[in-house]
Amino acid sequence: MELLQEEYKSYITEHMEENAASALSVKDFLLHSPVYYHGRLHVDTLQIPKVFSEDTIRIFQNIVKITYSIFTKVIREYLNNSEYRKLFPFSRELEELILVPNLYNSLLPIARFDIFFNEEDHTFKFCEINTDGTSAMNEDRLLNQALELNPAHTQMKKKYQFKSFELFDTWVETLLSLYDTYEKKVEKPYIAIVDFLENGTVTEFEEFKKRFQKYGYQCEVCEITKMRYQDHVLYSPSGKPVDIIYRRAVTTDIMARYADVKDFLDAVKNQDVCIMGSFCTQIIHNKWLFKVLREEPTLSLLTREEQLFVNEHIPYTNLLDENFCDVKQVTEDKNKWIIKPLDSYASKGVFAGTDYSEEEWDSIVHENVNQGYIYQEYCPPYKTENICFTDEDAEFKPYTNMSGLYVYNGIFKGVYSRLSDGGIISSQYNEKETATLVLENSSEK
Image 1 (cartoon, rainbow, N blue to C red):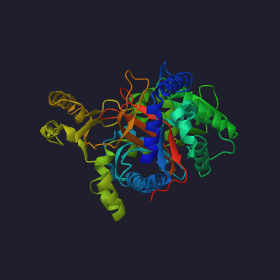
Image 2 (image 1 turned 90 degrees about the vertical axis):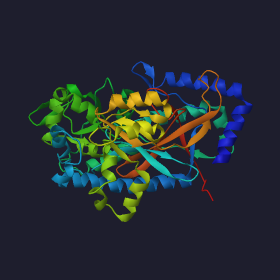
Image 3 (image 1 turned 90 degrees about the horizontal axis):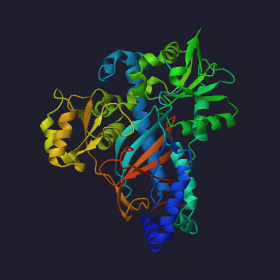
Image 4 (image 1 turned 30 degrees about the horizontal axis):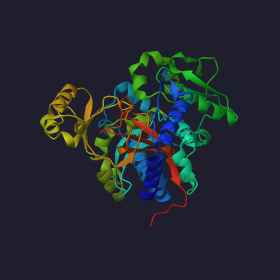
């Protein structure tokens, strides 16, 4: 894999003008593609795609298998044990939603496990877990299409065989198979993809809508606040009775606008609609999970192998609150810590001490003490060289890597590859994305 990386770099270095021109063509392609929405382009890519060996993919599959087993045990314990629930910082209203039985055979239908993976020694640490709102399938699909405009990749294809992941049909098939286990299933369910559409990746929703239709199902992209509930039926904004909700509205947004989505929530509470995924996924989505995982009584739920896995791969996490920690410890050893909102998404409000001076870090930490933040062990990420030709004075430099492992009902389905030239990967500031590929017949000796 290192050889392949060097071959990409060597070809680009020898053909800089050609690759720079291709990067502009790629940007133009993306500007006129579904990753341009809400008035801006949501993808900024690099010239070398992310390529994994088949051995690494097997490692990812095993990571997913163990992690999923741990997470389902945690969710099940929360649902069954009122004392265990007290370990989590959920409101009474949210707990009520979490405890609504979903009536199908999965506690965690869809997720993306974001990890910092070292490709040389295969060590890794978790960054965060996405459940409700798991996204970016469209970014990966379109970045793979854009590789046709990349001369370096065209050159590599003359020598190597690559394959990409399919993330749309596989999710449609997973959702439909889970619905087949639903206690109240109907013959031809009407499917609604639901979010606050001013926040949602609507073009991705439209692609999923096409895939559901390809499988013979009616589907509608729905503004969650415009759904109506009457006589035990939840209606879409167009007036159609809804049988399945593919929920893309994240729990944080729903709880923030609780009164605005009363009809939707009443249908969920009364179990009059099948919701993928149900609110029990919030147990895993919330960043407090990492603290609970490393402590009793959670450890007693796990096998010895799972306990070792947690201790090795889940970073130390605690609440940035004067009742939980010594704030001075966080400020004085800035390179050891990263702070994050307890329940957010899209890298909002995330700060790594390594990116700031001591004075700046002290100020950032004190601004967020007692404000619903966690502090977490900072994991120095694996870096690879790459080049962004849309940057001024483009040059090769090291980029932090993060691999998002897509998980459909416990099965690994693909990777979303993000990089940055900073200490964190933030969709608001410095995030880059690349197409993800697998090098076929690439078992490493």
